[in-house]
Length: 522
Image 1 (cartoon, rainbow, N blue to C red):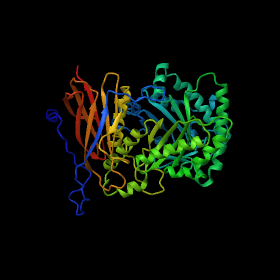
Image 2 (cartoon, rainbow, N blue to C red):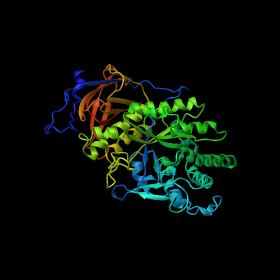
Image 3 (cartoon, one colour):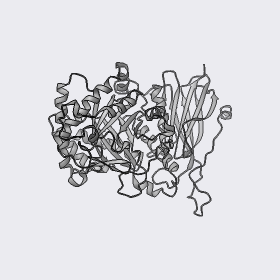
Image 4 (cartoon, one colour):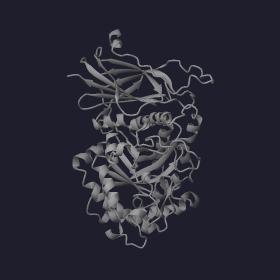
């Protein structure tokens, strides 16, 4: 054991605390503790059909044109591990329905009524680089229906639901033909393994907020969904080509699982509306979550799935297309998360934990890019905690990369067991996988528990990796914390397991994300 410790130096990182402050630090702030996990790299987790469970990046992102150095936005996203791009939110009123269908007097069945070239070009730029488009069918048709609210858009309730439904279906049909051409059978099969589709159309994101239905109520919103689904049913029956784009709805903002208990809540009303329909509904249930903890996120998604069952609905596919950390969390930790980089590191660890816990529950996960603290409580958008003003990645943005690398390598889940006796909520979560070449990837996410006021405290994470055999391995480690400006490996070491077991012990700062990569030497 002592021989292995020689090649495993302990890296001590202190961050997120101001030791010169006149305020006393909390008790046991620097008390070291250990979180231990057993990673069974020689085993494989399997689904109900006895198929290996692939590691899924769930790397959705809210798109916008600003990126560093004038690099094309699609190239930047691809290099950064973005898997699915949700647009046009960050483009303000570009690519919204009023620019695609500028005249309410035009014929929705005529191609000449649409101005699709810019939208199709943007979608193709993502699809051609392997990213999944999530086009937001946002706001009303007709010029000027979208109004800029800062850098984002805002609109009014739908004026003519029938026309709106026809136009959205018209855009969907034409986008479907353009997107579908890029997906061969092999790639579609790979997406199916990952429980994903080649692309998505999101109906009226946040209609109770940005589209003005909060005042009118859901009774005024349901006719728009009715008109769209009626038109979709006719279009699907008449279509001569397969529809590869799935429809996601209703994208309501849902603040915790408790919101689903109210039978008059928009989500409950929408589920009842779909259950009463004899025709089609959404292919994918979508919501925009606001939660205090990753565990609350799991409870929210499970609560939605339970409600789907109670309504007698068979579709169990769920997407979170706007995950936010609850505003009171930012308020409570404002003194300790004083800079954008510190807040971004916290969000990155939060997001990584949600991804670890949501691997089997979610089809898509898109964090709200502008979901940071708001200057005013009623503001539509908060701070961008993914890219800075120059378009450079903040820590939360780089937290996408480890998951992307594991999915890109076609890693499958291997079991991870807690070995430290900690039960219930945890401040450290671990995900591990092994790819066809035998490489092992391990993601460690550390996040302070909600009742722990400390930020920047350290824990020792001890990983006991079994099933590696007796040969030598190269281990590389990447750390994503408040000082991270780009993804990269900060440590490389050679290791030889003892009787097939490798002990990796490192100090981890909460909040942060660490990625360990183990490669067998030739």
